[in-house]
Length: 235
Image (tube, rainbow, N blue to C red):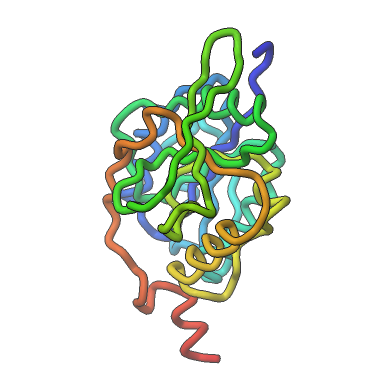
């Protein structure tokens, strides 16, 4: 590839000061890609949360967006609307990579295969029942990949919020995330939409089946710290 298109690393966060620093440090170490921009989508963390992170990582020159405790969907949607690159690597603030993540191969695949819109990098643990088809893209060398066969997969989560790389065409086709609902409902709603609709396919690289991240954060789903839960209870 003569010139690698820019990839924006989108880190989704709310008030995890220790976890997000570990996440950023690991992405710096393990992401393999020559042209990266950085963006933090924050759901209005308290105090000097964002300024302190930017001060700790000055070379990354973070762009930021802030929503006012509107939940995961609204927070990520604002980030996606603001980002101008065609490629986005999405990662929540408590997923710490522990091995290399070959973003070059993911971008190359989606440049060669316009029918692919997303490459999962999270590993498939817990998502038993995904039907995978072995495919090959013609390059100067050889690029093998696994495409998720949506209609044959028994597991709902052919799509997952877990770390992934996507092209703009993915959300152009499937739309953005549902807002004003809990984190779990947001993911489930979008997974249903992807699984039941025609649109760009989802793929996994050969090394993408084993787990690549430690999920270190304590879940807030179903608690008062999940904004969608608050909105639903107070409708």
